[in-house]
Length: 288
DNA sequence: ACGGCTCTATGAGTAGATTG
DNA sequence: CAATCTACTCATAGAGCCGT
Image 1: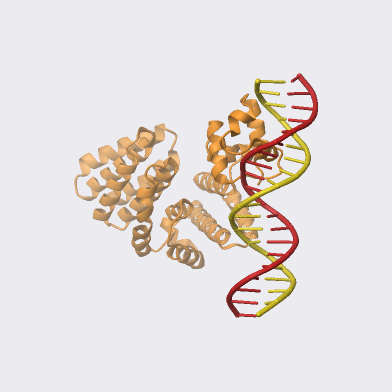
Image 2: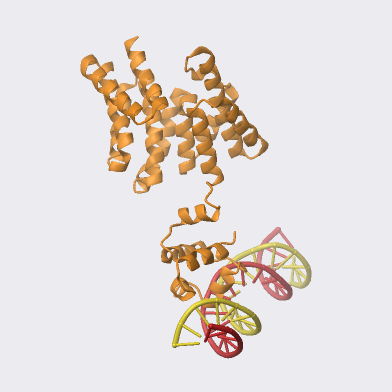
């Protein structure tokens, strides 16, 4: 990848000279050749240059890719938007694209996508959200992949978070124990916190479903710790919702239901219909 | 004078050939 | 087969030129 020409474009738009942009970082001659695309500079130097342009690496890469998402971000975006709108045709298209690539990580993503397709297709036919209809081979493939991970990256934590409902419930504990070592490392990184929050939400949901209420309570505390900032109020609201489900499950029906309904209404007012429907499953289960 | 540029030199690292 | 040598690439700095 040669970033020079794009850096030059940004620098000129900002009215900065080469001297202002590169002095003390790389030599002027090298800066010129870098901008012409004749050679690249080390990531370390690139970060310093981007600092002079008031930009971080994330934003620069986004601009460099012509304001398009990275292949991974695009995959996550498509998977979640197609799943949320139950757009099975697009999910099939995504599955075909993933199947064409033959590396392990693409096979894991294809398995994840096929799980979604099967559950959504069955839901459309029966009206029941039942994850047992996924293929055993997909479940085994994802689970075996996750079990092998020693040091978790955010992408892998996100994969775990997004596939929790498809995995063996008893596989959750060791996997979560293993990845939670990374939690403190990502505490101050907003994207990391976001991914951990979503993972915790799905984990709590499963813990409640399987009646592991004390375990759910511990996880809810962790979710609250991670979503204390105002920007994460949405996750904090979901934590409150889970609190109310625990109240109901532990016998305080009146206050629990009132609180849970209030929060579901709040999510619906924010146009989060599918999330509210998903969360409402916990209330229905309790009332049956 | 300043910004942008070319040419050349240097040191570190490495792939491949040669030698003991 | 391991150690050494050689040729090459990469990332860099500096001297100096050109146009405004």
